[in-house]
Image (cartoon, rainbow, N blue to C red):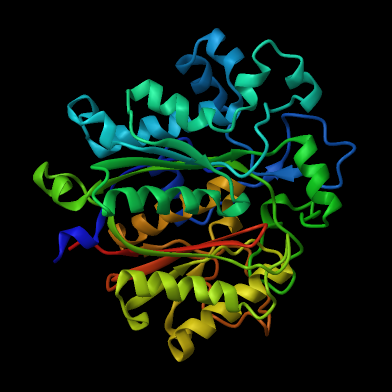
Amino acid sequence: MDDSRYVAVTGIGMISSLGLSTPECWKNMVDGKPGVRRITRFDTSDCLTKIGGELPLEYYEVEKKEFSKRFFKQTASTARLGLLCAKEAIKDSGLEIEKLDPYRCPVISGSGGFILEEGKGLEELKTSKFGVLQEMVNAISAWISIKYSLKGPSFNVATACGSGGFAIWNAFDYVRSGKADMAVAVGLDMMVTKESIQSFNQLMALSEENNFPERASRPFDKRRSGFVLANGGCAVILERLDHARQRDANIYALASGYGCSSEAFNIVAPDPTGKEMAKTMSLALEDARISKEKIGYVNAHGTSTPHNDRCETRAIKTVFGEHAYKLAVSSQKSMIGHTIGGAGAIEFGVTALSLHHGIITPTINYEEPDPDCDLDYVPNEAREVNDLEAAISNSFGFGGHNCSIVLEKYK
């Protein structure tokens, strides 16, 4: 194996509506548990959508224990979530951060939404003494770099729903190019706010199945009616493979290639033919120098909107041809909702875990097949796949920002 072609995934720190740690989130995803429920942290009486993927209540107790009152005043929810995800990922990696060259350790965040404080409107934020600090989207990566004295490049990527994936491929590029020994990449958002829900309702993008929140997110199902906003994020540690081997690190999977492109079609809708999504996946396969037949799983963007799921299905079939019908395809958004900037990072982390454990998480709420979506979406129950060698994780954002990343099993 040519070590220089691969980047090791050695740490994963995940927080979502299904749990406050990677093991908890992973177990609940494998069990097919729904994390979408009625919103409780603010009044939804004037919102058409009253459901979301809120974080468990225990999360807020963890926040209080972890951060000082002054730090709460200086930060928005998103920055604190990023720090907690990064803390878990770094601990999970076993890296002795203080022994690394800090200038060869980038920190890259991906957040696609406004930096908001849960339960507070924009006007309240603007009158805060620390309003500027709270609104800075770059504060996410900045606080992580300050906390761990990491002095490599530090910045945020904002490509809407593609932000987490874009953050990871940027980090991957730094490590694979030899410019970094390791990188922290985190994708996240805390967009379950009244303003966000009302704005997405205006676009008619959200599900309004308020009476059955646990069933509202149903990617690829014929009755899908829109996505469900959620809070959450994931940090990953990407490391030079030779470096990870030298310290006998636990390696979840290997990142081997990425593709990214712009739809140049519509500000919110993908090309209905799916050709640009297909191009992105093809670029990732080419960069990874892997044949399409070796891919056994596609971790789909799978938002549960009629348009996106149909386009992504067409794109997969365009890229893989007959092999598309041999692929497993699933979407964790069916369980946790759509975390916007967090989506690509969570899904990348789950893909690495799938390769590591030989288990593919299900697409829950899949009940009625759609003739336009005719692939194997791993309906409702997780699947053991001991022969899974490689997978691809897709992130497609508003604005036409497309990203696909190839991961391979570490042997």
